[in-house]
Image: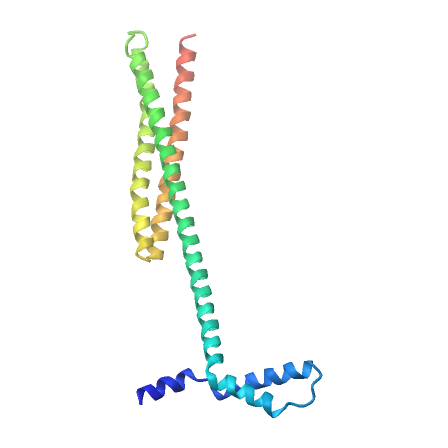
Length: 201
């Protein structure tokens, strides 16, 4: 009984058979043929009965499935490549923030070390405490943002889109805060240098 069900499922339905016959009739009409011989009709029925049409339809359906699968895989791969490029861009931006604030902090420390070697300029060291603090804050914010990038990737990998977006916004805010800290630190360092230059003409 199970074999009978499989055979019936593999055969053409009545609607498909009628559609094939109509297509053949339309093809004959295009050739200006007004009548169909019994031999032609018998040949068509033999073709339908042979199962060749079923095999052809099966090949067409399999090809369509393969095309749909390939399209889906290409879309997934494109999304993964885009995600990787975004992650790499984020890491590059955070590295830039580390270099900006870290390099500025090192430069201020070197200047403070130079000023502290002379008794005349040793009293000016405290003017660079504020810029150094801002650069340190910028480094902390950049480090925190770097930690949150891992949480963002984990959230998106777990398909927690809402949590991933919130963490992404937080990471962007921390990065913006690091940039602001660098700008304020640079401005205060500039004012400190200007004050020192004005007091020692």
